[in-house]
Image 1: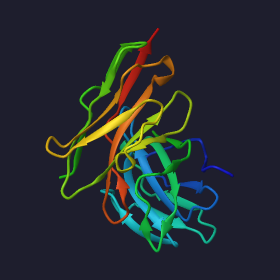
Image 2: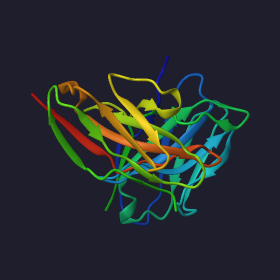
Image 3: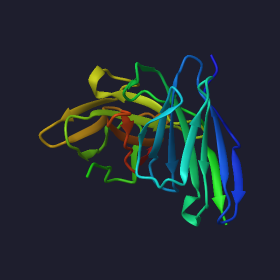
Length: 117
Length: 109
C-alpha cells in the first residue's frame, strides 16, 4: 500500500509568482484535502476534492485553486504569491462514499514547504 | 465562529506521571472530535476519535458537551509519548478538520 506523497518537498518563490504543488493520494482513497500550516500553528483547511470537483472550501481567497485528476491525484495552485503564503502545505487523502466524506481519518503526506521571498 | 483552543503550547511531565492535554471547542451543532499526533520526523496521524470511545497507546479522551471540552489523558506517560498533539473537531460539508494550535508534550526520563 502506497502512502500519500507530495512534491516538491521544498521550494522558494518570490512575491507575485505562481506555484503548483502536487499530491498522490493513498491507494484506495478517492478524496483529497489540502491544508496550510504556518509556523507554530495547526493546519488550516484550504479545500477538498472529490470526483474531480471541489467539495468544500475553507477561508482562503480565490487565488488558491486546485484540481483533482481521474487517478485521484491532486494539485494545489497559488497565484500572485504573498509573503504570508510561506508555510507547509499538507495534502491528506481519505475515502468518501457518495461524496459524504468519512469524518476524521485523514492520511497525511509529509508536506511541501513553500518560502516566499 | 468555530474555534478550537489548546491552552498549553508546551507541556512537560516526568515518565510515569499522569498527563492531560486540554482542548476546548466552540462549535455550532455536534462536531465529531479527534486527536491527531505528530511524532518527531513523522507525518501527522490520527491518534483517536471520540466516537469510537477507545484507548490508543494508553490515551483516552472524554467528550464533555457541557464544558465543550475534549481533553486527552494518559495515566502513566512514557518517553515515546513525546510529540505534538492536535485537537481537531470535524464539521462542514467536507467534514473538514479544524486543528487547534497544538501542544508539544515532552516526557522527561
